[in-house]
Amino acid sequence: MGTPFINFIGPSKLDGFQRGAPAEAQPATIPQTFLEAMEVREAVFIGEQNVPAENEFDADDPRCCHWVVYASVNKTEEAEIRDEQGNVVQPRRSSTRTTPIGTIRLVPFPHESHPENGGDYWNGALKGEVEQQNSKAPSVAAPKTFGIDRATTYHDGKEPYVKLGRLAVLKEFRGHRIAGLLVKTVMSWLKSNPTYFDPSIKELGLEQMGASNEKEVPKWNGLVCVHAQKQVIGAWAKWGFEVDEGMGEWTEEGIAHVGMFQRVEVDSKPARI
Image (cartoon, rainbow, N blue to C red):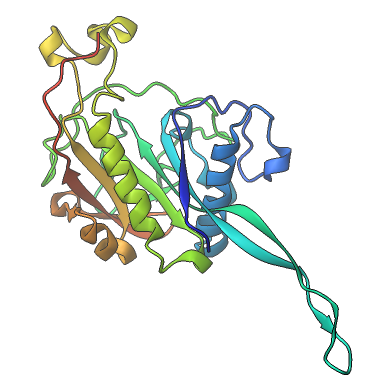
């Protein structure tokens, strides 16, 4: 494996994206980097963890930042052939392809309410709730409202936070610290871009943000959340995240999850005008 490198893509229009369809069947307007992120996610979450293909893409994807890590992978096209005397009659032919091997996404605030402790979620909805869900899902996220959530150990229910998720590395490339590289890349980016997701007062207006003055405008102050699969709590802890006991435990697509938080040091900053 060659030295890996990472591509970044900010929030993008993903109109027409077909969940579960191959890249060649997707509209030409879908960014290639996003298609490659989905290539990795589908291999890991659908292929390995049996998440239904129609559940993998969601309405948050268009408003997220995505990172994809690549590696140069050498592949044998034709094997070497030797004659009975051991002489090479056909040399080995190989090619090198830049292959997407890992991905992660960063979801801006606001978010849906914290999952219910003990809740069983499927395709983003709590089982038993009556919801109209289109099998293809909207390619444009419905506007989320700024509101008050239940308080947990590390979240007061009010403070804006960003959420890391969809961390995936292809099986054959695990053990090379690729996942850690992705997490550290995002955390470093957040420190350098602390106002990236802060809402614009001009664009939204104070009332839509639930604010009566500029000081009340929601802005990110360094809080980062992850809904971690229980089986990888240790990895997230190694990267500086702590389990939020008050959030509890729940399942998504049959996989047990917990909430974890970390606070990034950011300088004080003005609200976006």
